[in-house]
Structures are given as structure tokens and as C-alpha cells.
Amino acid sequence: MNAAALAQWGQLLQLADPTLPIGGFNHSGGLETFVQQRAVHDADTLRALVYTQLQHNWLHNDGAYVSLAFDAAAAQDLPALLKLDERIGAAKAPRELRESSFKLGVRLLKIFARQPLPQLAADFQAAIAAQQAQGFYPLVFGLLAAALGLDKAHSLYAFYYNAAVGLVTNGVKLIPLSQMVGQDILLALHEPIARAAAASIVPVQTHIGAAAPATDIRAMQHEHLYTRLYMS
Image (cartoon, rainbow, N blue to C red; front, side, top):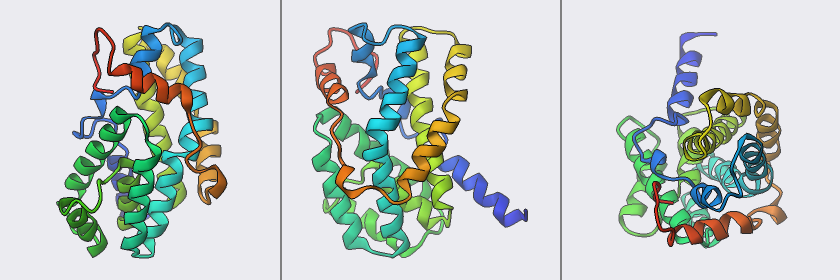
């Protein structure tokens, strides 16, 4: 493998890095409510939640949007990206999940827009500034992956892994659990994540936006928790 190919791997690692300064650590995606209600209270229930999110939520929602955004960006199709941005906003019913997604997306785009990117990325950033788009995180992730010339399957795997790391990390803190238990959960996720990435290459159109009512309800209830550590 030559230096240029290795550099692309570096770009993918940075794009999916959970420690990027975009504020992801401030959001639990409704997990805090699950924990306070004792629906998630140990390693088994956390593991079950992560698997459920991967197979029945992320696969048909954010993962599918990453895939569609990647294709639109590869085709230099700004109108398709704007329509997808609107579609994502309509699908995210809980206010906190909707707001956290576009805040993370806008910050992610600002980081990578500091280096040379195709004109489409600048055009989309201008659309956000003109309030023609909100810049949801999965759309920006897919747009940047395509703009950086990354492999689509690898990008999808990295996206799902990043989402799983965030959920497991927050679960370890909230329940609480040992860091080793969290790593055991992640180690067992590599095969399921690979299957989800493969299934997302061409999303099933009739499944996109499939409801995740338990997560949505907990995300809505999160606004009214007596005590909160996270913003969502």
C-alpha cells in the first residue's frame, strides 16, 4: 500500500474519530432516559440496546442517509443533498435528536472545510449559511467521505462503529460498567457492523426512515428528566 492510500485511511480515521471537537460527548441519544428508567441497567441490556439500534434504527435511518449523501456528493448533485437534508429533518421527530444532529454536522463540516475540498462542499456550507439546509450529521459525514475520495463501504463501517462507540461509552458511564465490559461489547459488534455496512451500500428505499419508537419516546422524555448529564 502506497503513502497516498495510507493517507486516505488516516482521513477516514479522523472523520470517524469519537474525540473530534464537535460536541458528540454531550449527547446520549436518549440513552440517559433508558438508564434512569432502568430499561438499560447492566451489560446485557446495554448490549441489547446497541444491537437493536444498529439493526433496526441506524441501518434504516442515519446509516441509510450516509449512503444516500455519499452517492449524491459523488454525483456532484447539490439539489439531491438539499432534498435529503429536508428528509432527514422530517424523520427526526424528537427535538433534541434533531438539534443535536445538525449541530454535530455543522461543526464537522467546519473542521474539514479548512482544507481543500470539492466545490460541492463549499456550496453546501453556503446553503447552510443561507438557511437553505440545516446540515445533519449523517448527511455531512457522507458528503465528506465522498469529497475526500474515501471508499463507501469503509466509510459506512466507520460511521456505524463511531455510533456504537458513542453509545457504549455513554452506557459505561451512566450505568456504570467497567471499561473492559464496554470493550467486550464493541469486540462482539465487528461482524454485525460489517453486515450493516454491506446492507447500507444500496439502502432499501421502503425501509428508509423506519420508526424507532422506543428511542424517540425516550429522547422526548429526556427534556423533562429531573437531572441530566447529557444534552440529548
